[in-house]
Length: 94
Image (cartoon, rainbow, N blue to C red; front, side):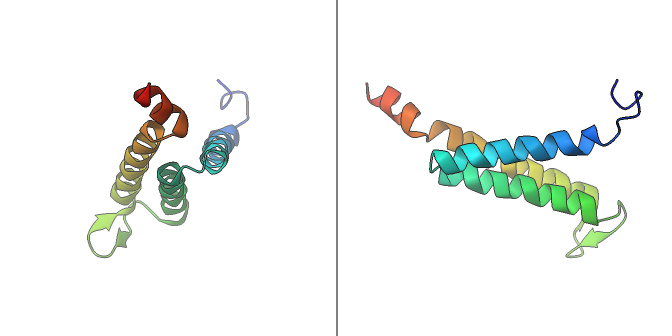
């Protein structure tokens, strides 16, 4: 809807803002797993922004594949981080 209204930049700004909010939350909670997941997420943004679809990394992956692998890594790290927050550990101990 916003793209049709001429606001195409929103599709790049919103994910960036979301990553910053995730990073801020991980830093506030001192969540190492969450911070690692955020770095992987930002890494996938870098891969997407710098590569062309047919360019290869390390001779193994094209840009789209590497972006998806780093997104999967980010999701896994963020999921582990979500289970390792101090609040969740207190609930498990109760």
